[in-house]
Figure 1 (cartoon, rainbow, N blue to C red):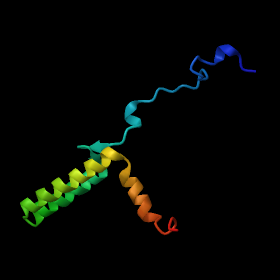
Figure 2: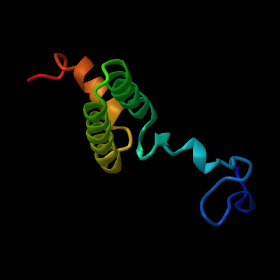
Figure 3: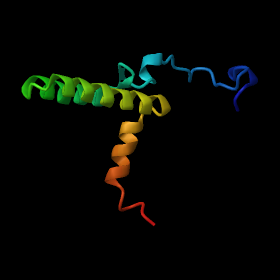
Figure 4: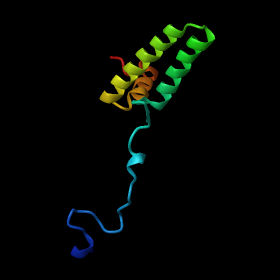
Length: 95
């Protein structure tokens, strides 16, 4: 039988609390966009700007891609994983 003194006022059981750092629960963003998408976008823009010597097109590609990624991350920081899962399981979920 659990004594009344072992349960805290907030309904938590003593000994089962773990301090959790905030950085472990927040998504990793780079400039407001998910890290992987920001790196991919920057790499493609740099390849276009440096490799193809299309500086303006590379800057426009980076600006548009990063802006779209930031807009989507503001609505849902995990949109990239959700989109990847949706594309992978598209046939399974069709009606």
